[in-house]
Image 1: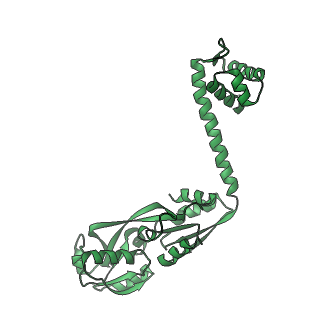
Image 2: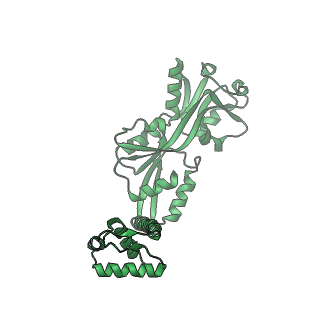
Length: 292
């Protein structure tokens, strides 16, 4: 039995008329009748009653066969579509911009798997600070961007799509011997007057801190900024200073010298994959499936 047999039966089932089905299939009535007889002989069951030539009757076996024919032809079409996708993914380059958190969120592993599965697709990754990443996206210099929701909110929703990749919590990070380290959670009132060191503007953290302090009604005493987490931690060692980091992003850098504490009202954020509407390539679509 061939796919043509399945397609023929589906058309015959839908038209309930040999003549109409033959016209739609672009074959003769005799050829269609012969095909139907051959199918019934192979299955050793009657699929259609031809007593009424104008309006065929589908047997119970025919109803069962029709359901399977639909499934088989649908799966075949899906297979063809996917194979065609692979043909279009044979070679090329994906230009991706990301805030520097790829390894902390397991994205490098997923990217490596994509490169293994599609060896002729090259990836050009630029790890950028938030402001530069936003500018690159707005200038359509990137296929995809990976950034925090507080950053992606600055992009026009009419021009960009955003997909959540991961969820994280902003936490207060302080030296293990800091007085506030004894508390289970920290409120904004606890932080009034405390010196702050922070990731640089555009990091997504800096902006979050600004919003937090503004809502609390006072200005943060930010003494130092840097794009590097390791430098931040060095600046709070055995001091009364604090910093703020997303838990998963900070985890690889933490030692027993530091502790993290949640805010009294937990602050949740999303790492997002962002791309311009209407310009997503087949390679970029496939890559997205690996990250999601």
